[in-house]
Length: 170
Image (tube, rainbow, N blue to C red):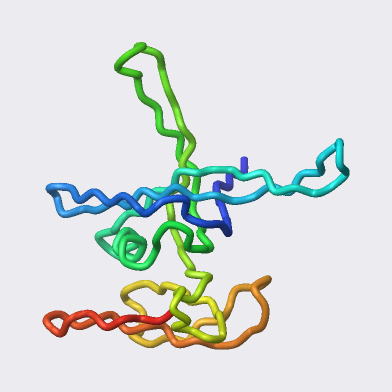
């Protein structure tokens, strides 16, 4: 029997990421993410956006991408992003009522920043894509489909240790 658990969303953060670091050195960034569903208002006949709010978790992996670090550094409330991930059902017993509780969350696997900084750091308004840490320091990436054009943009270089961080326009 076939099985597929894949989520692809474009939306906005509804609040700043909340980041926790574990004694083992791991890190998780919790994001509140909103996407819109288009529904037709039966009374007016007009199409309206109905928001859907989602909880997203981004982890730093031992091997591969440090998604929690990317989220913590570059995403803030109101920023638009494209995310890919998979669904996970978290279950627990409520301390107050003793009832079983559950919530469906998205675990982040891939991330693209879709808006330039508010100060106009990228006048073309192009998308930036975060690449795995083992990729070359400056890899060209294409704009995602549906966001217009196929222009190429250079990925920012990670700041070197001891040098201080440079502002990365995106």
